[in-house]
Every structure is written in structure tokens, then in C-alpha cells.
Length: 238
Image (cartoon, rainbow, N blue to C red; front, side, top):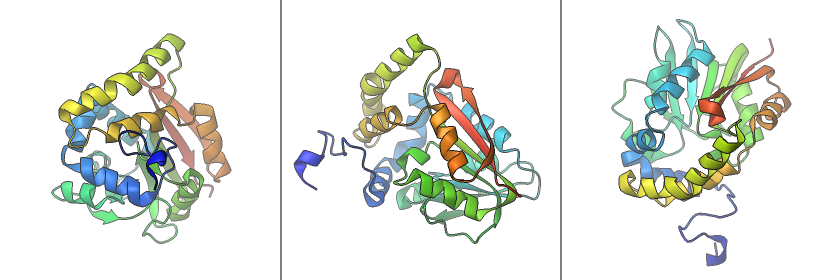
């Protein structure tokens, strides 16, 4: 990669997501990833995790897959009430940082999951789909491993619904977020890329259309925190 392909931080300005590069980036932030997320979200991340679990609606005895699970904090949230939750991530650094958590953890790419067809009752991906090289391929892969009637929940940053708030939010992303990250992250430059990836992500309606195009039915979304985050939910047809 030539120097002209990179921003001053070392990450691609075009957001062309090469899996090996993105995995390496997350390896470098793994050590302080969870505390950084809590600081940057103002503590809202815990509520977003609860809302994701509630949207999934898994029942006792069911098995769910948490894709792009990072260190497994979100997986532990899902593994309540008799639900078995499996953490999956393509960053070895993240998996090592979360090895102490009481959930099974496997290495795997969202576009080629290490699971058999129709082997889980639901799939969750939180704040990870925008880092996948081919979003549409990942959504189809989630359907492959989900049993008929199972559920997909995508929790992802989205577009605030109130215009003045949207303007303030985007300014925070591009200006304040990298500055705050410098105080708490083990690799603050990565958060410039993360801010850019959030800005480039589809709004709520186009994201719902992607789920539908990938074969998910009954697609709907719910805004959290004024649309900073959106929960998209779909069902695999029986």
C-alpha cells in the first residue's frame, strides 16, 4: 500500500476494509477496548447491550452467536436466562483479552463463519458490521447459520433523527472522539478510522433494505439515543 492510500493516522481514508488490516487494528486496541468504549459512549454502552439482548428475545435452551464480539462483554449480556451465547471474532487480540469471560469463544470471520448450516437460533452483531469487507455477504452468512424462524439483530451506529443533534454528533465523531480516545485508548489513531466508518454507514432505511435483500423477513428497526444507534431486527423465513 502506498503512502498516498493512507491518512495521517495510517488507516485508509477510503475505508476500503481489508480483513487482515482491520483485524490487526483491533488487535492493537484490545487491551483497553472495553474501557475506551464506555468512556467514549458516556456509559451508554451498557444500555445498548441490554436493548440488543431484549430485541433478540432468545429463550432458555436456545443457542445464539455473537459475531464481532470483541472481548465478549456483549456475549456475557446475551448469555442469561438459560441461553447459550458463543462469542466469535476475527481479532485474536480481542479473543485473548476476553479469554477470562465465562462464554465459549471462537475465531471466525463474519463472511465465513465456522458453524454448520442452521446451527443457531439467533445471530447478533453489535458495532461490527460496518467493519466487514462485504456487508451483504455477511448478512447472507448469518442467514446460513441460523435456523428457520431464528432472529438476527444488528446493533450499529446510525443517523440521528433530529437535524441539530445530528450536526453536533457528527462534529463530536470527527473532532472530539479521536481527542478523547488519546486519553484512554491503547491505539488512539484507530478511532479516526472508526469515526470515519460511522459517518460512511447507511442510515436506518437503507440498512433495513440490505437485510431484506439478504433474505431476512419482518425487518424493522428501533432507534436508541435519538438515532445515534439503531437496532435492526429480522427473521429467517421458516
